[in-house]
Image 1 (cartoon, rainbow, N blue to C red):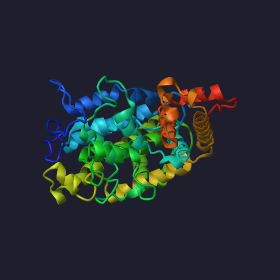
Image 2: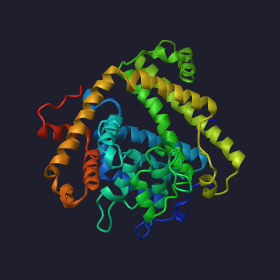
Image 3: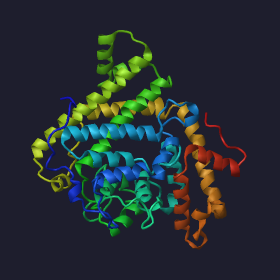
Image 4: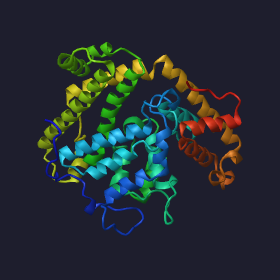
Length: 402
């Protein structure tokens, strides 16, 4: 089944006309629905612009052709819209969630997140999804009447729960939060506007999550091959990728490497999108949901890969972990990047007066947890280059990260 066009609106699609609204009431727009306005607010935010200079895998010094958080975000949004259109879901909400999904990432990719999580170990930890919620509800300060972007409930729900419920109905943490608890950002905001952390999110949020998986597999693979981290032939033994590689070579023979890599990645994306559509249709046929409430209460995701593609996805991620994310080249650079953030955090904790005035205002009177969270908020908002420049102001041994 190919993505050739849209279909009739599904009965369980989100409807902007029936949104649960915004925390702060606003006049309706005469030309844009509420989910479209969310997209636009995210795109015009400061945090979104900063994604241009935040690492995906390779830091910016290594070349202009590798992906950044911003280019990755656009690719996720494109895949999310394609899936939403093919499944009869709301494209604007799916796009908004894709555009927002990485706003909370600190500089230097997952290495930066690990560093801040270690720094915040005694203060509730650091979680990039929770940080995204902080960005869009508190840290963006663009409007005269409220902090944050004042996004719709549906967008905030999707930011919080795109990977599934955070807790059970009794409030007990689930999944990755089982050991350390649900991050404070989620529970605190839910006291203002209940995000129903115990339920699944709507289908558009599930689409944004799986679009992220597809983009990671295809585009990190593309970047790794561009960087010469392994030969194309190493992919021949992987499920799905091996078959796609064989198909490309059977049709085109020994074409030049850049064309081969592009054919491989674009066909991988198409195969995975088609699989999501077929598998989701199968699940919909079994459950026969008639409303978003049926999706939220299904007890399992409605959007997903087939068993075969789940296996292929896992194999691709395992391969990239071994041959890319944990390669000596990447680990050396990311280890140095983690040191930069650790040292910045400790410096600001000892000298809060070195924070910009708008960040250290009133901070001396706060307790240790609040001070640490403010420092983490500031560092998480940095771009790679800003973090390195800040480090150079306070230290004599800033790494080059090349």
